[in-house]
Image 1: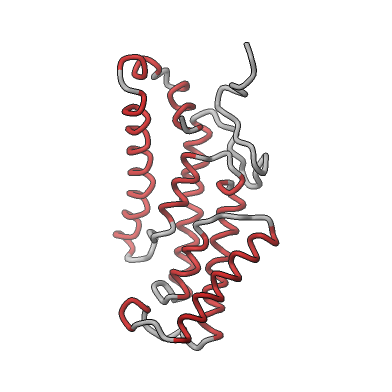
Image 2 (image 1 turned 90 degrees about the horizontal axis):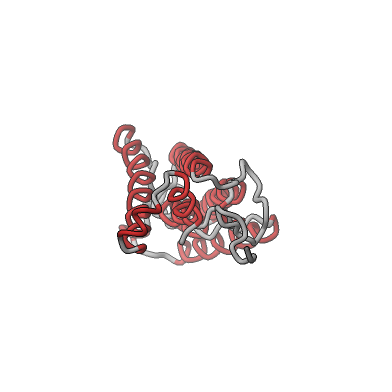
Length: 204
């Protein structure tokens, strides 16, 4: 059971659903609803503004934030910093290899410069996240989105980061509603998840 789903079940006294229905069905329903709401809000903002409020790496970020929220990689610090590193590394690679005005690799094909830009952006993103101790795996996809030319304009990259902040805000509200001690910024523990009801491995 994910931390957040268990917390919501306890908070809203939905244990009766688990007694009368298959647990997987109940948990899957929560997963469906939370995933739908989080991405639908971003997609709605994209539709209304014509800006990239939704992008592929936001999906795995949402999964981390809503289903393993107590992992260090799902903390607001790691999420925001990781994506920011990815954006900066991706754009730096575009500048270094003269690709800021080039079209996306999906339509123009992959050149040697694009190969080097993609490799450099991912390497820098991974290295800097490790050095700063802010790992957030979806940021690896974000930097490729930039270095492959899918999203490249500075104003678009600013919107991308705004979308990250918005989904972190959603995670803060939902996780706190579920009764989890979700951090405001830095992770409370770098590697340990705490179940909503405390340490269930203890006796009693």
